[in-house]
Image (tube, rainbow, N blue to C red; front, side, top):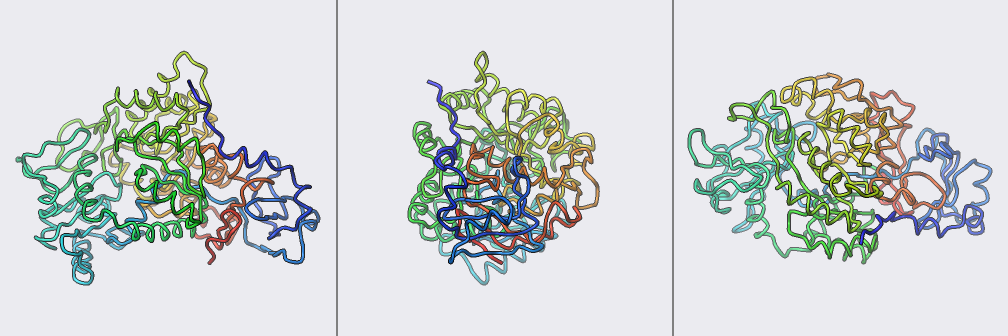
Length: 568
């Protein structure tokens, strides 16, 4: 029987009886200011907001707020600072971010310092010297970006063997969809010249032969990750410490609802245990990864349970293709510039068996379980839309809110189809700055200038969100907003002026739009009486400053469920 897709915040909100009932008990805190951005269309701005416990109890003018002030109420004058709803991470990987905390950051500026392969090798040598892995352990790095390195190529096993011939070394590409390893890691993972490419992945080889060169794409990455995971299994104390640090990192950017996209069920269990003990300060929406053979019955039960101490399971994730910066996004038209060593017309490939994926999507959708589908290239987006369209063919379309994660190379006709199918593209808007110049080389200007077509989606009435995909880039929401509003590349090119968003629309995508994606618009996303007391205090009003300076606005305080979890 088809279940209803549940609006998770509705019960909490409808149990409240309005602002008058709240006035009988003083508020814990009242914020006063001229830059309170409610994101509530019925009351777009306010002079005061009051919170008590984990709820907003008043939004309105200064005079009315007086009813909520008692002897112990903390009154705060914002001055030039702005108060906004807590920001919502519409796509990211908090457990992935947690595990990277102890690894080597091989990222290029502005996230790291690596400008060439030699820089990366020096970082690895230094870590090996100052903090070597234990016996049998691996040296791991993340964030290298061939598109930004001076050599414009991936480091290979020959490069990494210069660091160590004995210690296994593995580096994750900035996209998370590729990686590279030294000879010791290849041996530890059992990868030889006789190892076939796994379905949906590629083991790159030495030119003209079968010997692996160390670089792997998509599902071939799992061969390394499986071997690496075996060396650190069972260390839950370390993971719990890392997760707390990662939540704090997200909170420092004003985020009060965090995603764990492609979550592992073992991690979900740990997060639920920590949340029950009150050890997770922000809300986390976990989206388990379908490709790990999860039990759909178990996931359905967890989805129906909703939040347990700040953690809930919000759907299931599929990965349909790769990444445009890694040149593995699956397209219908050939790339203008191929990956290194690839000859002839190239469109990359799917990472799933289409009919198997469609069957799983249909099963979940008819259980009432939301699905999240990673689709960067337009061929992958076609597959995502076909899965939803075929699942509900001949039926009344339910309020399913199926999410297309990234949706970067979404064609104009696909924007129209997203509106028809009520699908939610979560645009990877951060790409315009970080890889916009690279996309012009890969796809040509016609496609590159239409990357993450947020304005087209807005004009067609499509619900959409924007995201950072942390840890691919840090969860800096003001920088994300700045990118969506300006769409300026590293080289200063405006990557499709017709796709820029207004500051208000970008902020909406990070607040009420994000809440809508999660079926939580009744409890989050705006400063509205009865909603959860998730707020962020910004150093300036992002709707009034020069749009070029939005990225420089600091987050001064983050409040989750009524409690300050970050303060500068």
